[in-house]
Image 1: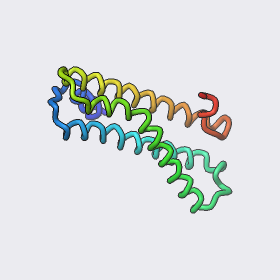
Image 2: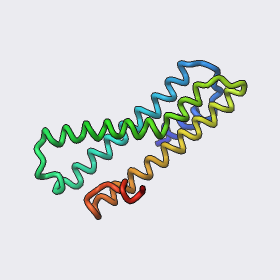
Image 3: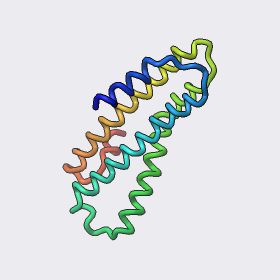
Length: 135
């Protein structure tokens, strides 16, 4: 846990030059880690509430999981895409702007984690995701 906090601190406090490699690494870190977290929550829902999915075949569960990952990738793209695009725009105050973009992506990351946690516990009550209720 200490390593995670120090890594986030390094990301937020680091001076960012106009280096595309660093920007790509930051964008991939947020995107890939969110994909893995979404996949973990999908797996946890499948295991924790296995009685809901008992009638499905293993093949159907695997296909549903892959479709879910495709949906998650689209949601993550919408969540982070604007900040990633802004991060790659050339600004005269690049360092400050990069820190703002990274802070906004971190905020989106935390909001996504909170929503996934809430969805996990909500699923136990009504046996469906809470997306419909949010919108």
